[in-house]
Image (tube, rainbow, N blue to C red; front, side, top):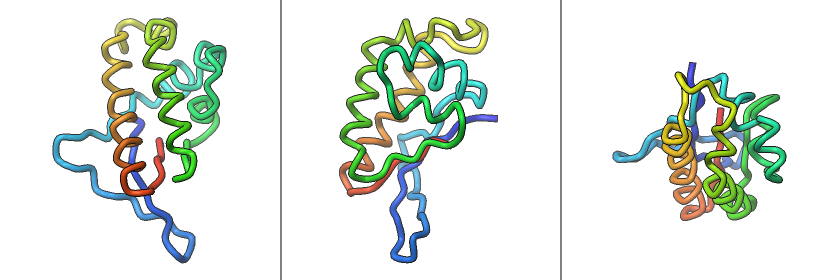
Length: 122
């Protein structure tokens, strides 16, 4: 099972509409196990991350007004990729793999910010 990252808009009735992933983009955000071993790990928490650790206990919803702050957190993880990937089984993930999945998340955040939408990792 894999984690996905999507851009969403909130509907007037409070529901959520997930936008299509554009050609050339990907919604892959990592393996399901990465909820604990990567994004929600103690290493990521120790860096000061606030959004990503939510994945250890559920899905991550970044509201439209929080996307810019989420992008700063993505930049923090990108600047510390070796730390972020440090405890991951090398057969399942490398710094390169974590970097690629983070790039998909960063791309979704850019797309969301451009249209005033939110980001969900689930």
